[in-house]
Amino acid sequence: MALPSSGEITLHGIRTELGGSGQISLTDASTGNVASINTSNAPGNRPNQVAPHEMTEFYAYNHSEGSGVPDISEGAYPNTGVQIWTGNQGTSLQTDVVDLSSASYVGESVVGGTGFFFFRFDSGTSFRSDAQIAEVLYNNGSAFDDFQGNISGIKTTSNTTSTTYPSSGFINLASGTTQGRWNQLNGTPGSSQTGVNGDFIYYESSGGGSNKKVWLKFPEVTFTHDSVTIKSYGYGSNMGTLRFGVYMIEP
Image (tube, rainbow, N blue to C red; front, side, top):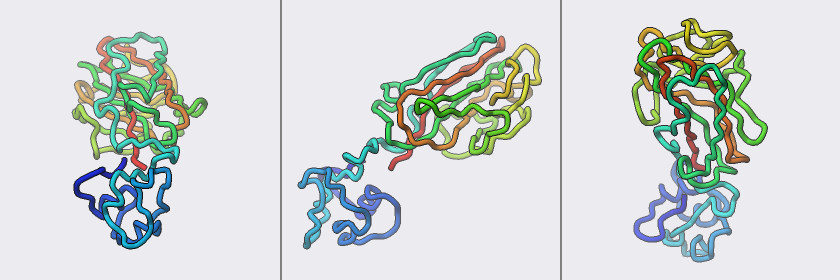
């Protein structure tokens, strides 16, 4: 994200734009000792690397311009997730294709950027509300889909009700049937009349798990394509709403 083209510029802001954190000097920043100056910027929008060095030389400087990394601010797109489906979907596999560059999500291509996928499940009013994630396909061939045991780095919140992406409260996904959170399960969910048989990530709505908004996030990926395919199940007469989004990590 480029520095402002007018007004106040701080060394902290310059350091953030160049990447990393900690104290720096204007000389080191201006001469490329902190990070090589990105010469894709127009001459008036980057330091000339010649003394005397001025803060104003960093006006409109964009360290990512022309680097192949999208200039996208860190954060959740959108911070509520976008509805994938709502209500009872029956026992059929639901397949949804998402374009991360669309206005509903990031609004520009994410190719070259890094981020992670997240889901928000608004559970229904009873135990018949066990949503299941079967696959998340991305980068034209990569997938999160081997849920029989490979769940390393996948995290869930537990019994939460936040409608916007939470900055804390995530715990490691585990195998089991714990209510009010996402779980890894081999086979059919414990309650009848909800869920289908398979090795999936599923939400347990029994007990205190109903009427919650519980989040699920996957490990970071670097994007080579904007398209994501989500395969899921939403079988249960009191099924809630599944939402999906992407959290981008600023370069």
